[in-house]
Length: 371
Image 1 (cartoon, helix red, strand yellow):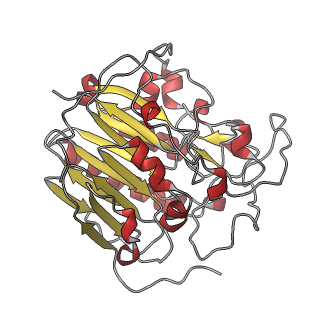
Image 2 (cartoon, rainbow, N blue to C red):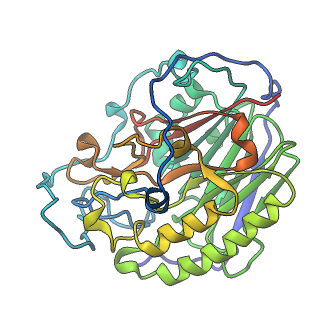
């Protein structure tokens, strides 16, 4: 059955914890990586991601729907000879599957030999209660980011478990009209100059998808972009949303540089999806969605991961729960750090934490250096 909608407006919340050290200080070191920086040609820049063909695309769900263990997803894309047969059996991650202890020293190291003094992490946690039960905070404590952005909290802001707000962080939450659906959160060691929720557009701000934090040197925008849905039933709505969001970004960029992160629900080019050819009509890999992303980048932004690793394959951030997709690394890169061109000198690294479990997405980490 479709989820019941409440009659309340999108709500936001902030909880305060003691502020710790200035995150723009205390530099850290790292080791070297051999990834080669190569400029992509024009065609590659237009199309650079891919979705898993044999695994059906992600469709937004809420906590009131059936368990993913019990319901298999239909694949809206047409199959081709590129596909391989994948076992149907799979299961959700349980707490027993998770490591009992994360290596904090490993998380402190970028993949190159550069110093950094600021780290941002983004993760679609696919339900904050389940994420907490699966040990999500253990990872967060080990990673120790200066800012943590999460998407799909699937929880009313008034019901966010208190333990989700770590000591030393200011926590900000936004939920939408529909309970158990969407929602974003932001935790930050340094109190922002200002926090804003939504794009100030009634039509688009009732699903809890955008929270923006203003800092001295940049705006940070955490988003959960609308999914076009199975059968592309929400593609037209998403296209409207994309137009307004592009204007929203431009307004912020006119004031100071922007870092835009979150689950953007698009695999930009074939390299960003395991099986692109059979997903050309799948939500997240349609030409319309990819072109929208290309247009935004053309406004003076860059995809920080692809800038650093233009030819890195099999680098994904989302895997279906079904058919052992994660074990086989049949995935999509849907999660990004998009940055203003002005911030290129501050970029140190962008890593995908593919070994970190607890959701159908994995965390991504952005390392920066500010004077």
